[in-house]
Image (tube, rainbow, N blue to C red; front, side):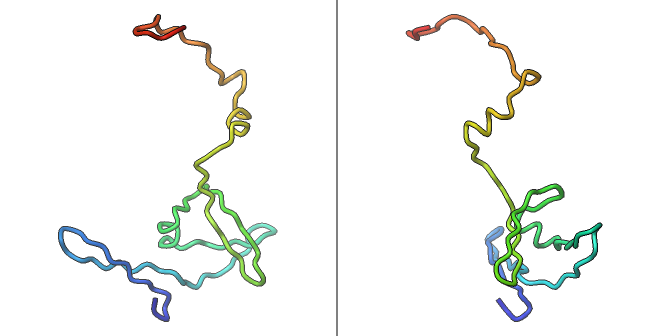
Amino acid sequence: MDSTGVLPHFFMKNHQICILNVYTKMEAKVKKWGNSLGLRIPKSFSAQTGIVDGSNVDIQLEGNKITIVPLNKSEYTLDELLSKVSEENMHYEIKTDGPVGEEIW
């Protein structure tokens, strides 16, 4: 990484070495948003982290630094999944057919 915060990223494409500048440091301006403060995330950062409009993020205060981490939850507990089941979205048992092989029904 150089002093501008640009980290070159190398990859192969059609047997050619391509260089992509991956930004790891950028200056941004904080603006008032209602009673809070808002910070715009640069497009290059959102593309690298997968943060899109409506994404959930974890915001932590570490000393005098604010850390923002995208929440990409891909595993859920059974209790979390079952908490989403209601009378409105519960389906009924579907009978397909009898045993085909040596299944015991």
